[in-house]
Length: 226
Picture 1 (cartoon, rainbow, N blue to C red):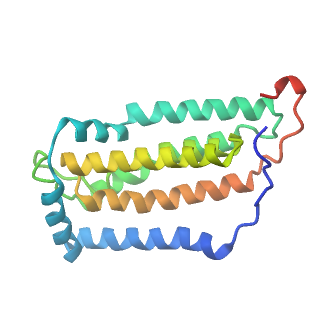
Picture 2 (picture 1 turned 180 degrees about the horizontal axis):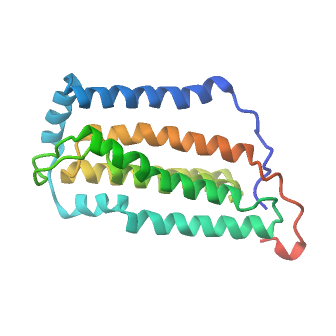
């Protein structure tokens, strides 16, 4: 069984509102600056010239945001949680898994039109073209690894295990983000914009999972206990 589903259920409206409002506002600001080629864009381009240094390491780190790397890991987490919730006798055991899967599907549905609308050119390290803002690879990494983490956390029994999982998730997202900028695949603002957007998406998923409309799991048979 997961750690008590009702422990710490109360959600403070102020902090939660900030988790949604602040990144949403930052995303709006960054998007406006990119669209208007504002002062942040000039700073962004200067920062990129300092950071870009394509090498094999940065390319490998950037690959952590590939669908081929992120989606299989998310699928493993979805499968594990689905099996555990079903064995635990949880009502609507499939609901969190479906919610996380739909959130992953939502990523390209949001990112692709934004890329077309913004039509931002790439860095000098990339061939001529547009469609670099926001970073799809960053969004894929953030939502895939973040959703997997949110689903797995209730099944970890110790604070150390939960901290380790959260640290690993953050490390994977930051590594992919660093690789994308260092390799020159994206401007820093492309990555920062995706961070803000994905913070809103993952906070929404977290709120949904906390409500857990499937209900609390029934007491499992002793043979089902790990």
